[in-house]
Each structure stands twice: as structure tokens, then as C-alpha cells.
Image (cartoon, rainbow, N blue to C red; front, side):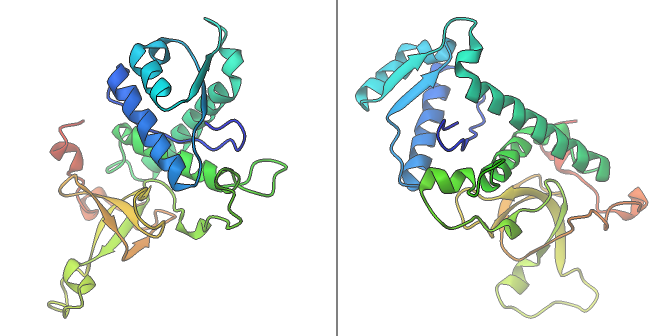
Length: 239
């Protein structure tokens, strides 16, 4: 989290090894550079941030590093508070989606919910501020377009691939769209491009031609036998 703008950046890690942590550091710095920001200093906790790999990477790039005292987490209170806020927000949106669509939403989507919570928080102005954190961080006067934000986990209907490419529709009564799970917008595309989890394959793809059921009306209160089967948990070998 940036102390000045309060913008945060989430990088899911498989482990807390030095290699994984330095990779996350590089990812953040590339993202910051894309917004015209060069990272010059880090203020961190102890633990993996005391490892030689982290210190060496900072030294090579001419970046300063300071640490809070052992057990004195309040000395890094901004980051600690943001971690709590992101966890709370991700828990709320994931639980909400799971109650609305229990057949398709699982707690295994937690990393995606955490990133979606971060994206939403970065796009909304903080209390008593006129600009959002991402506007302050990038020194841009363009407000993020909030119409690209949709409820996490809501059903999203993706236009058939042949129709997307301009081909004629197939038989009259065949489906012209497939339903998937909204995982937020893609971090590597325009904000109008969504990440969609396929119910049948368990794969995540970027999609533009989408319609979002933000109120879960097409899956709520409907007999489970009439809903599209959710097979992604089986494909991904999760329960």
C-alpha cells in the first residue's frame, strides 16, 4: 500500500519464500511504472523482508528500506489497517455471492475476491477526499469508470464465439450465450474486459461481449436441476 495515495496492490503468492516475495515486488514496480511512478523506498515488517534476496534487490535498484520494530506492528499501521480492510471486504463480497449462487461460488475463489476488493477500493474516493486512490497515485484527473465494476461472483452471459466473430447464428433454438462467473475485470486489458470463469471447463478467459446479472435473478429461487451445472470445482479438483 502506498502511504501517500493509500492505493494498494494485491499479488497472490503460493508461499512466503524470498523468491515469491521478490517476484511480487517486481510485479508491483512494473504496475507502478505503468502509472508513471518509480518506487524509491519501502517500509516493511520483519520476516521475509529481512531476507538477503529482498535487500539485494532493493540495493541494486537504489531503493531504501526501513523496518518497524519486532512485534511493533503499529509502526506499519497503514499497511496493517489495509490488510484488515481488504480481508473484511473480500469476505463480505464472497459470502454474499455464495449465498446468492451456492452451486457455483466457492471459498476457493478467495484470491479473486481479494483482488476484486482491491480494485473497487482503489477506484472509490476515500472519506473526505475528492479523488480516488488510483487518481492520486497516478496524478491523473480522470475518474475510473465505475460502470465497469460488477458484483463479484455474479452470473455473466458471454456471447457465443461464432456470433462474436460475425458469423451467422446457428439454429433458432440453440443457446447464443453461455453463463459463467464474474471474477472482476482483467488487470492486463481495458477495464471493459471481464475475467469470466467457465462453469464447464474451470478455465478463466477474458471476455468483452458480456451481459451481467448483477442481482443474481437468473439463478436465485430457481430449482437446482434447472440451473446450468457448475463443473469447475470438479475440473479444478476442489470441493
